[in-house]
Image (cartoon, rainbow, N blue to C red; front, side, top):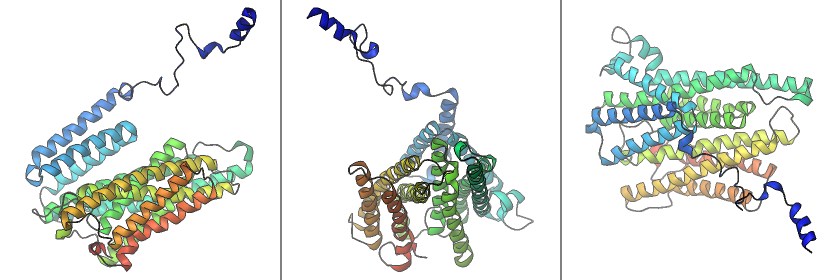
Length: 418
């Protein structure tokens, strides 16, 4: 018996137990704490963001109440977190703030400096005024789409010639497209920051954050969607999906240009009483993180359907679906937060949390749609075509909640009508 036991013990894996009878830890538990992975550049970035927040607090106390002060410092913390989590955001945030501050200096308190000569200044008129920056965003988005399409065509031709050696690395055209996508998001975000300042130049007592009408939120929508895609492109090495995302982005550009030219939506208007609230500063951005994620997930759904049909130059369908799932999960989280914030804003403004207004009803339908999507994937184990089609159909549901309600229905949110 003793000999048999010894033989059994000798068959145990060598690494199953150490000399101190302590089981080995999982590799995730062996990773260093997140703060130990931060570099000197990360801490310098955090110091720069905190310095900017202090300067805003000192220079603009007359425009900020206690709630807006809290929003300022929470926003600074979020900016630091983004820069630590996604390293390219460090230069993006600091660069856009620096360029926007340059525009503020060129204005020198006079909105006419963005107009015709002799008062107009060249850099403001053609590059740094909000409308100029937004037009650059539109142009760069179109150029990014063209290069994503051409890069995808090159990848397709390479896959036809050498189907057994399909590369996951981006070709030159796809790399250039990513650079243009970054530049487009940078121009759009800078334009929004400058537009915020311009609202105070036009109406010193009625300046406001530029998320008050459909034109402004469409610009924000394009910035958020672009940045989220660039994160997933880098994380999953899926540059070939850019053509799908930027096809939708070109549609957003077309709507924005039409809305500006036909309706004069680019003109800065004073806030209506319903929107004169600090709640708008947190409710709207959270909402559009959700919208941007859902838009991107639909584009990934189209790509997955094509990949499932055997198109070799696309990434693996399971990898595409994983990215789509993560996008919907992030979008659902922020859309849930936005819905809760909207209910709190409604209670503050109208005395009730929920009134089944058309906008509220359709927001609930959007929330329920993606809640069921996540449930069916995580609990029921659904995969493949049905989830891809569901994500695509979800985009149309979301689009109706975002724009369709404003076009065809009336209610407490009718101030956002087209």
